Length: 420
Image 1 (cartoon, rainbow, N blue to C red):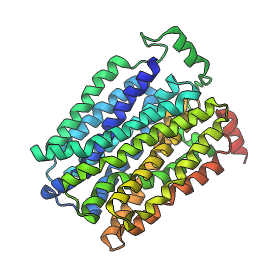
Image 2: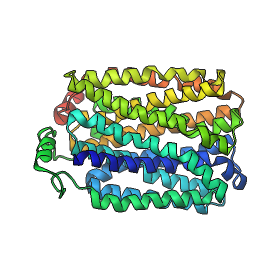
Image 3: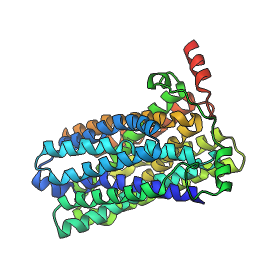
Image 4: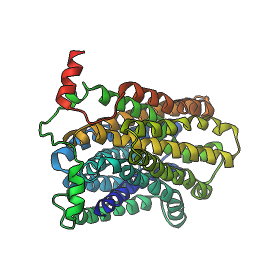
């Protein structure tokens, strides 16, 4: 059906975003020969990316609500592709930091736009599966990055990596312009598919709701705090895995290219299984809240095993990273679909943006802490110990803040929260 092709199209966009953001961590040794980088400087680069990513995740949600998914994602992808290209011209730490900041600004709008597209195209019983397919793009991009970057570095300068990844983004934009329309406007949609989508659509809410009003809703805060905690761990794993292999396991670029893709492949399986399992429970007539929370709880339960990484051999370390990546992306798929489950389509982009803002701020806070700890003698063991507990705490937050998963009546919810 046409809507599953839309899911694949969005998945490719997310794959490009994760390919773009992995270029720096994987190529860090080669870049460091031209632009020296300490652990703290490396964390500053990631924080610069995440700071702009956080604000644009929130702003990107509003942008797609204002422009519509098709035009909004076009603007977002073109901007981040040129931001990626700008890395190739960097000659100093400051120039690299500016490029990283601009890349985060562009990529911040990607997931809110994808979440809005899911709300537009998919019935509620299919949304978790669709988001799993889209989120699997994170694994595709991250799996491709280590071997591709290793090959490019063997053939030419690290600067060409950024030229190549920017070209991927611009080519995708052309595909998007030809392929994506809303269900009502799409020239190739069948009457049967359009009816199936419209019958399950949430009631249209035309009133514009400001961010501050959305922040008065308990469910919004629950999602934001949970994402802050879980993404604090995720961005550490995402950005620091290659550096951990370089620093703690004495890998070179060839060795990183050979094995660093394995945890990301496991993350792709987590995307598909997490969303698919939740959708399966819905089809088996479990309540929506039960389906989401059971899958979230199982995802969070595997995360503490990451504590063992510093104490085992490299084969087991890669296996534990793979388990953590699997659990994280299963978790992430489900958290990203919750705004579409809870909020009307007119504000899904804005809510998803606020949730992503919280996640990126968690990444900044924990990334800076990790850089400081590693440069001041604490070692990776202490950092992994802290990271391994965060998803479990995040799950408890969701249980408390979102006791029931069902579409919210925004105005009545605001009146209720104001009365408390």
